Length: 243
Image (cartoon, rainbow, N blue to C red):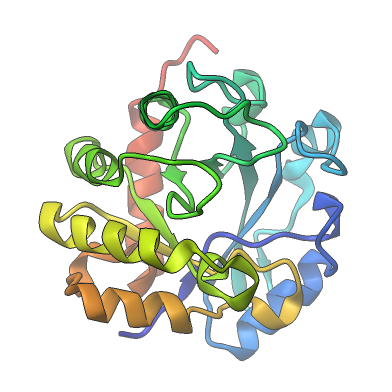
């Protein structure tokens, strides 16, 4: 399976990442990536950029080093109601909105509370894709999330960084989730979650899991920039207009 898209990457703006957008784009071009997401953390994460950063994303070039750029955010779920840390007026301006749970931004809860928060965020019309459900910090009903992904046609990520040596404990969750995604046939993205330029376009662990679980190639959006862009266009047609 050849992948041409990496939608989940961070720059120095996130505060705990160490490369610039230009450096990430150059690395992407060397790896054959044709579409790159710039998804720095939402403002509830310590060190993350101010809302002014997200309000100014329109100045980002549409292309760098032959790689198309999608400026956006990795928004944080902040409550059991699935609320996000970015106001709608900012979300409406972005080319890409990833959403996930992070310890520092979300209060935690039972499996039921966490799952409901995750699914409510999935149903937000300004959410494009959900990220790293397999991380061990929060117990989730991964089968319900996989089923809802298929029902809502919302891609959920298999996160390569979660499967790296720094995130021990995630393999079991991610393996179960990948099997559920294969069962329910929901749309999937693979994300590097790169916080340094050398990890942009790195999907080796996630690809191994996709093959092991029997996930079909047509489920994986990263195989085509056009598929990703068509999906994002369709999402925006269904958004409320009175933002």
